[in-house]
Length: 304
Image (cartoon, rainbow, N blue to C red):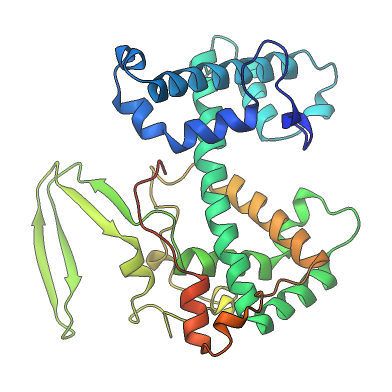
């Protein structure tokens, strides 16, 4: 897909890929919850059903197009990695079916891009609010970036990753992470008075981690409400940082997210200066008031 792909609806389709992706991502809860016969009940339900069909057709066309490319080196990306995994083990125990392949594609399209967009939005706002941090990031990028950076160079952009981690700490895209105990165990937690309490946890018990509470806990994070990317440049409490969850069920798209996020913020900050637009109606606001205004958001239920 290129930047100009969605200017017109291609032959054989009734909407552009971008429109299909946007409509389905904002109505995915309805698509999951409504039975198939519900599409006959309203115009909106029919549009959601059409959007699902359109997006599936687009993904099938993407798979066919990539499979028909002659040179493997022409398709070195995440999508091609999924295809190669299928082709390297055709019919094998670990091979993906076409339905499973499309399911993985859908997860990366919806969950990966939605989460990245969420964090990009807040990171750019924070960099505009904290110009000293933006300048520090710019200087590090300028010292590391060359005209032809490769994937292997991503680890050198430590400040870019620190900015994203700090943004994820302050504004995690997922507030609650549910876990289920697979066996009888106990859980020892610290009390507010410094003591400890132990609780029995029977097998099958659901335990919900409140991510914002953990990320803003002063026991683990110095000045927890302040934007301080440098806290991720040294030793930091990895067990108190859960934007991707942890364990065997942790986010499978973490590396994809980090690579995409670092690339975007690095290119933007290397070329542009991000500033808060000065508006007369907010001329007398304090820094704290400006931060609250710029980073204000509505809480709601999303698909990721």
